[in-house]
Image (cartoon, rainbow, N blue to C red; front, side, top):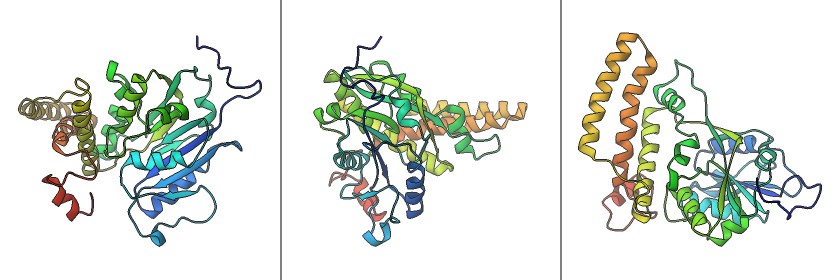
Length: 319
């Protein structure tokens, strides 16, 4: 049983909410995101905002007038910076953070607060469902769907180090501000870091699986691998800051395991004429290998001046 939420007067079914969605992408992606968020069912005290974290000229990034407003904030291209800038523009009691590649249902906000959270709950983990990919879909998309790579259970299952992804999460503003919001100097792992700081400050986490969004996964192997490398970079940063949270695996043993798993899986897939087994046999080991290799990539932004990765990122237009 939750303790009573006396802060809401009789007849009020949920608190006011500010919805914030950061984006790094093309103009077409910006307009598509605005259209999706524009379908959310809002109340007069709610707000919704897209934070454009993409470095570009103001004229190139200007959004169409009307509809969901856009805040251009690319002074630092990290998700934590974008989310903090968006949160600072609102004043509602709760902030719902959504990733740009999610699709929310119109009644998402009502679902979040049914039931109302306990008074010491600072974080609500909404549901995240992987976008369905048919058996004939691309290998990366099919693997992501089969494995459920975006499902909240993937990170909540870590026991003491479990946390809900901010692809779909609600933060009580008082708790969010009390711990200083997201770290702005890292490109991955900021959601886990915030969850751990909230826990250490005495705030609780509740799950809201019925307040779910659909997550659009990467459709190419290259895009999927790049994303997993970023996640590995974040895991290494978290393991250093929170010892015991995300221990590394021995790479030589992992490589040999990957080779054996791929070969055995492909043989089994061919024998059974099972494409899904073949997809799992190839992408599964690649997933684990790229994640571990990503640990060697610095997570800080901007990159340290002496980092060997700095020159490569600057050539590619990053930081």
